[in-house]
View 1 (cartoon, rainbow, N blue to C red):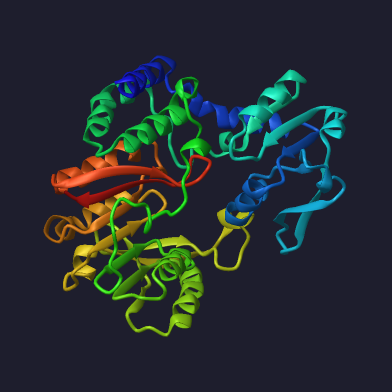
View 2: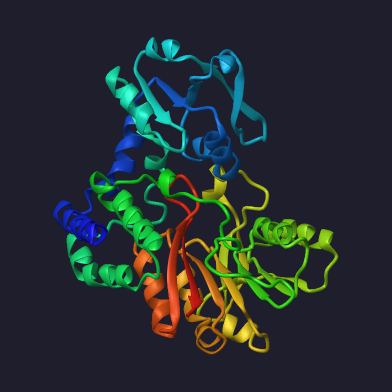
Amino acid sequence: MELRKRLIQAIDDTIASNYEVWNLQSRIFDRISKCSNICLYGAGKFLRDTVKVVNPFQTYGIDVKYVCDSNEHMWGKYIDIGTTESGSIISKEIISFEQLKRLKDCIVIVTVGNPKEIQILLNQWGIENYKFGDLVLNVYTPHYDSAYFAENKNKILEVYDLLADDKSRKIFTEVFCNSAAPQLAKSSFAEIYEENEYFATGIFNLIPEEECIVDCGAYVGDSLEQYMNLFHNRVNKYYCFEFNNGTADILQKVIDKYQNPDIKLIRAGVSDENKMIQIADTSNMSSTKIESADLIEARLVRLDDELKNEKVSYIKMDIEGEELAALRGAETIIKNLQPKLAVSAYHFLSDLWEVPLLIHKFNKNYQIYFRHHTPVVWDTDCYAVMK
């Protein structure tokens, strides 16, 4: 009951504050734009993984001067934190905490999975600091006002009550608190983080010789490779959906190396209708130039139409906030075939409750779970499996 009471308090506080935490990201960037010395704190795995996945400091135009770390063996060395538009590596010197304290007009961005202790230390020395996660807290989420949260309060609590295990209820509560009412969070994103996204969560078992896997948002084949490594290249059918041709070309090369005709690329996105749309062509440009990209055509399809003759047994969706539309386009499959589901529920804060409610609407025999798979706001997934 403690979790549910805290969730209720978080919703009420969000209503009372008019979702004030949403403005934190813009306030931080405003401070950063006026500061002379931006220093990262933490030169370990978290920073390396973050740079590898999203190259955030280039994307957001953050001019990092130094990286600080407590490991004295790293002092004076350099670490890669991104690339220039031409593809050159950007490296920054790793400094000690004593050097950091001497920097004037400095803001520190803490780039470790669990920043609590470091932030306490920085605060003791009067050094302005923010968690890296604060820079990306909103993802695509718009500002919802008090009336919106008041209207959705019962929905949020309905999902909490639907969840199949205590772990899911804890993750659901902590994700909401960290995102909307951080003063009530008891565990950070890093503390609820676990690996083994999609295929090895322990929520359900996969029998590779029998599964028909549908990978929506297959990107450059990372989830395909994860699956193949996990099951030692054993596969029945695996459909990769990717609608950006540049990305799909990379994905095709990954598929080709397995030399398996049962792994198929479908150059399309998934939605609730079959249509052509225009998207930015990002195949040959850095993330800093996406807004000026040329437009190209891409195809969207309904899974119910595209795979109507397949016995789909597992659907994974990570499609940049289009998950609800894609689920609507797979309603018949979900109702009739009852596949296992792994659906991203983090692009919009409202996905946290709208995704499981839609799954439950289509088939009330599903058990609903949540797991979280990064040390920041990304990759909260809703899993569903038949009772």
